[in-house]
Image (tube, rainbow, N blue to C red):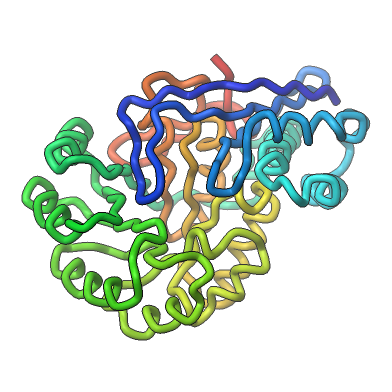
Length: 336
């Protein structure tokens, strides 16, 4: 099995701002695994919040190139368990590798990845489209540029309720709010009351990730469901979110790929938590992997390619929130 690593800089259509940063370009690494006539693809983006860079991911994968390239007969679960000890401190790199291996494995079986898992797609959720923090006229312009059934609105300013009131005047779509750890306990509870009246579906990660007492207070008193993101990184975090959140947003890059992501979904369902998968700013490579999980999700945020000025791959496509799977086996990704 051959390993190919390539770095890309994904250029965004617009400056993308959340409560803690703004970006115009998103660096990422694409992992390609080749076994005979078959190729599998995986992606992970750099992320300063988690101290992950593209050179770091490439260096960590290069260190275990011999182990990777002498593998290929294992199941994805067996491969992940074999590689995890070497990449346990860089789950972003492990995600790109695991997703590529899952893709390759399904292609060798001649099936789409979700078919290999015996998932059915009749009730797949729609994806939202993210509106980053910007002057209100620019946020309105972004909504009008791409009419969509569900918008995920980034907040964490001093004018959050006023922003949503203004956006509501321009759209009847479902709104979801992501404060990216930018609020306090009382602020969240009060905002939840006002935002529920404005047609908001849920709040994502309003408090800092480690404020577990605050999360518990918000969980008890919020008028809206609360979904964990930064508080739910690894598999063991799902159980910690029970009675602190109403659901969990699973990011494949943070947990180490599709293999642990599927286990996290099952644990969340066992605990009665709502299930969501989210994307980083990433290309169709990463998004096509997330799409394989849709049948198991209540919500999904996989709009990464819609934010790019130019994509680097073909795969799943999105049309007014609906995900259309690519032709072919695995995740259906083809690099451009």
